[in-house]
Image 1: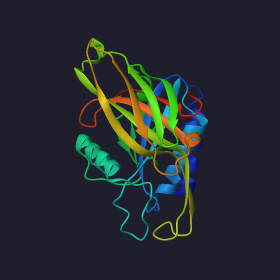
Image 2: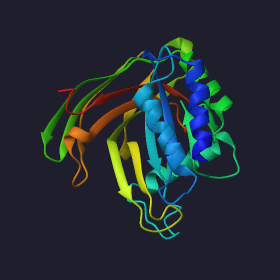
Image 3: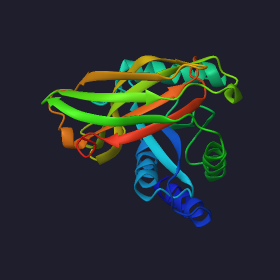
Amino acid sequence: MAKYFALLLVCLFASLAAGTSTPVLVELFTSEGCSSCPPADALLQSLDRTQPLEGAQLIVLSEHVTYWNHDGWVDRYSSDQLTGRQADYVKHFGVDGSYTPEMVVDGESEFVPGNAAKTQQALEKARGEPKLAVRVPSVSIASPDTIKARVEVDALPDSFNVRKAEVYVVIALRQAESQVAHGENGGKHLSHVNVVQKLTKIGTVEKGKSFADDIQLKLAAGDEPGNIRVIAFVQQPGAGKILGSTMVDAVSAH
């Protein structure tokens, strides 16, 4: 499986050149208890680090689900909220059920990330879509366990054919590691990127009415501000299309 994902990277990188511009949100539903997930985790890290898609900024999220926790290893990064988010996508896409690893690109495409053709097609399609401007112009560490941020979103234009959309903010660990003792990955040292710690809906944006809010978000015990990224995105209701997104590092942004 690891060799297959390495081949996927070679195929993908051979056809796409580095660059950053249009934001594309890449969500990976994963688990430390799933033996098929570490290669997908590595792929997500490579997408974040190398930014292979010309004219795009790939904003990746590692979303750990709970339904593997009964199999000998409890994934400390997993949450019921993220399991529920994946279930919403299952309903939206009409697939048979939740599975890992599953990649979702801009809320429009879902697939097993080992499929090179689908990965490339989904990323290129998302790059070509018009995006709503989302900004996090300021982030500050208010206290050892609290982050303050300002989130701004332009009004929905008529061309989007959407009346209202939801605004979310994510607190994510830029890097995270685990030494897995039991389960399918027992004995392995696993690493992750942009691990979602908290996903919060902070409001809505509408046609003809922009959104702006100053928010405070609590960090989990032990989280280092220097390892925190703040991601904001706008999504159509019902786990729909991602209309825009942005990402900043908490420390470098203030």
